Length: 241
Picture (tube, helix red, strand yellow):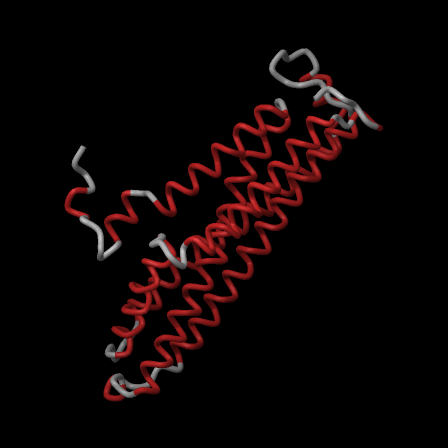
């Protein structure tokens, strides 16, 4: 595993990065398929979103609904802005890379790496946060589209018509798509934290990546929150140990 290629790139680093990408892409693909047959936070929450939109049809004044959406939009905007700041930090590190290498070269728990390897790690981290920004920005646009759909809701006296029910379902679906995009942006943050461990040691990077996958899986498919929200689960026993 200590085989070294050009510019100080090691076989272990290549294996660690490949494992990271495989874990991220593989988990995302697997989770999307698995949630079609098993309850997950995304699938369970869709029923609540649909009920929310159907109830909104019966309200003459939908100020509360707009306030709820504004809260969601503000939280996504915060993450989008944070992604920009993190990206700026990564770019700033490029300008002082030699000083950082000098500071870390005597630390026993930090693997020795060439300048090219440091640049590769920083480029990987920067790409991760660029991807996160695009996801959060797209989620914001989708929520804006949902607001427009809600603005097209008919008057409450027409709430039970087929057309009204269809437009409520469309609003719920756009809501679900926006949250799915936001969820993938949040996953990017989780994996971004794993990528930081690559600066310490490739073996730690491999282990932390696996840990992140397990954490995300537990929260999406095995969490107490899911058991509480799932109508088919025994939520009364969630807090019994």
